[in-house]
Image 1 (cartoon, rainbow, N blue to C red):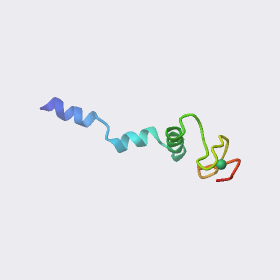
Image 2: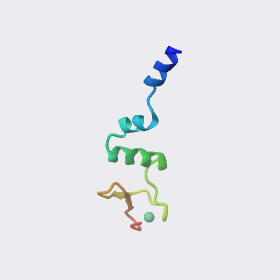
Image 3: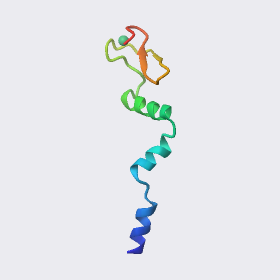
Image 4: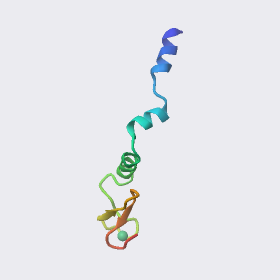
Length: 66
Ligand SMILES: [Zn+2]
């Protein structure tokens, strides 16, 4: 079963793969934002599409400031 052992060693664990893909927190946030808003930001309160980008990586609606 040597081939199997080598396969398991070469296969990246999920956390290691995540760290490689998201070496910075900002890259991770960008990825999550693109998952949540595939067509760009949409305010959950008023539906407006424009937002400020806060220093902590969060979005703030330009219209209602949510
Ligand atoms: Zn809004």
